[in-house]
Image (cartoon, rainbow, N blue to C red; front, side, top):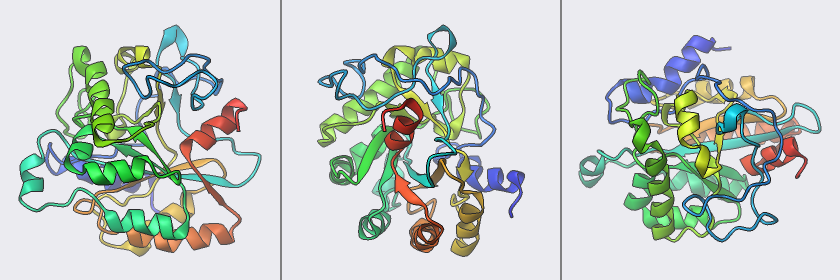
Length: 295
């Protein structure tokens, strides 16, 4: 079993190499405002995920934390069946357009094809810049009922200081950065982006949670770090995932060919093994629904 320190090192290598390179975060991100899994009755903000959702049709979310802070979700119930949620960060920062134009691939169509072939539901946390670069893929993922699309900010800049070397977003621009991503999804043709947000680098504090409170999103973290960022040994990553998963786990991986080239092979390796162990694959909304009694 790879130690926690090595897991964090592997998953954050993406952002420590250079500040414009996407990062996926750390399991030691601040837990400020982490709320109990109770359902929010509020509708999404018109500027957020869905301007047309009704309270009855809205996806499950957590109630606001203390003082109205954005709630944080890390894993589902440990009882009630062996369920696991795979999540994939589709990372691209606001400054990486020239690199994409020069031929760097921030998408991973083979990974999405593998998930479809294996019939594995998943939640993809996408940056708005990624959706602008790959609008056809964003629309295909976002409108496929096998998947759900969450918000990973527009810029993939950090919402706190000292977050794995990422540039930072000022407190006065945090909300607009998230809203800009939802706008990019709509422009790409995504009909129903989810009211779920993943902080770039996994870094947040009370100021960040307060800044997003008006959007009525649930911040989604994880409890299993795959270590796929910059990994070259798919077998090692697969072992790390298999060793970390437990009922209710949320696994973080990446949908970025250049920065996580082994992820497709990892998925093809771990899915049959987890199914042999009796696990069922679900989306984050299913996990939150189970936690709030809306499953």
